[in-house]
Image 1 (spheres, rainbow, N blue to C red):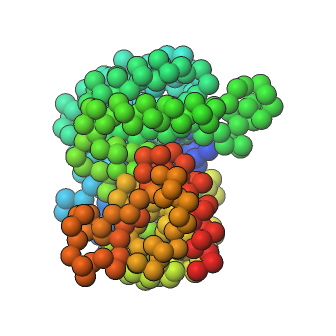
Image 2 (image 1 turned 120 degrees about the vertical axis):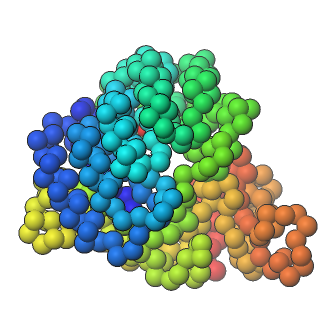
Image 3 (image 1 turned 180 degrees about the vertical axis):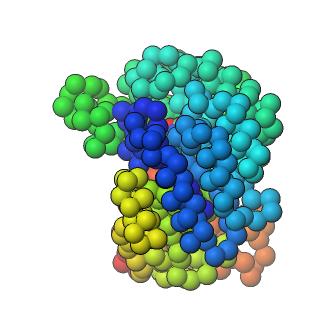
Length: 387
Ligand SMILES: C[S@@+](CC[C@H](N)C(=O)[O-])C[C@H]1O[C@@H](n2cnc3c(N)ncnc32)[C@H](O)[C@@H]1O
């Protein structure tokens, strides 16, 4: 289950998520509506929970605890809460922990003040360091930090320092994203008008290579294009990339119900599923919950080639790649192997597979392929769309 908290104390210029500032007066009624939605939409216990935003740490501690506590979940479920360093107080951390959170994801973004400034962040690096210490004192062993690289004010040396500071903090999980310029954001408008410089693709590729090197040397395993873990990956996010079922509650939250079983991936890759999303604005969401007890705004059924290609493009984000039949592997364009962008491994991950297992194999992106994932998926789309 994904639980969306749309409130932020200030919206960052690059952010295109369903996040709103200056609406804190809505919080109590919003939490009531989400608790009601949780009760109406979850027939089973959740195996993972992700409370994301927006900024869940701007909620009063008792409201965050109420949200977390109202999700029926399995014993030992992974429960992540996103927090901003400046609002990750001991009170909110303790409330999250007592309600069952097992993991905190902290928006670090950069260790450098001028990069944090460009990104409109309200914290300094020492604020983040204190927040991480507090999270550990409260008992959170599992800690992620989110980083954003390749903003135009960042140099290679700045990014190296951010990576070194990250390693020094020692979180057990790191997510690093290239700055994306979204058209409908203040930064997107400024970049489009030429008022602000945007990121450069080649610089972003180089910074990604730096992250790959630095995090590998520090013992982090890259298990997805933008995600590294010391030992335990984020099980919740792995579910998105495997097209497992998930229920999203709260404004703007998306849900996905696969048509066929998942074991752990779709058994029939063309069967697809139903994707729905809730009203994006908190007021509209709350009105829908009040009037109809349902907040779904729209949906789409995904099937056939589209489903297959979605499964391929999401599954290939993971280092373990996707399992393909021998026949399907035959459709992978030779040029992708020749260019060193993809590789095939035994389906059980061992090079010495038994002959009966050789009728299938795992197609995965190489490190180079991960940097050019969109181009690889476009090639595969052409090849698989025709088969
Ligand atoms: C939607 S935010 C919410 C978490 C929290 N409020 C924060 O800002 O740290 C989740 C993460 O998405 C990433 N993100 C959001 N917009 C992005 C963009 N345009 N480019 C790159 N990363 C982005 C950031 O790393 C951020 O920490």
